[in-house]
Image (cartoon, rainbow, N blue to C red):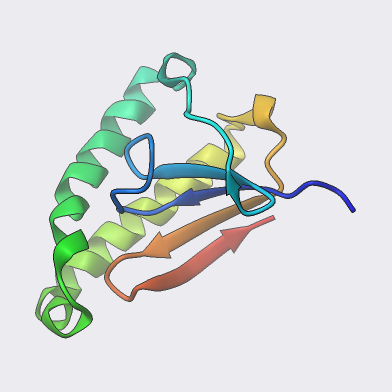
Length: 113
């Protein structure tokens, strides 16, 4: 069976690089070399993460009152994930799956293979 390398974008504290977490066969794989990320993209990623991160400690019931803002942030997050995929930002890692995890709905809402 082929190794699965999955990149997940999620505004969560377990992510190692502004929301990006890379797993190999379900286990933490690497800490991303930020110098290999284009600076413009990294700045937008940091902005998205800093704006979304405060919602990580909020329960789903309370998140409902912030749905308009988290949906806006999810849209930005999906755009960032699409850019990672389309621009092959991490092509050197041979990633099989790209997943966007919404903190606002507490579930994956977008995936690219």
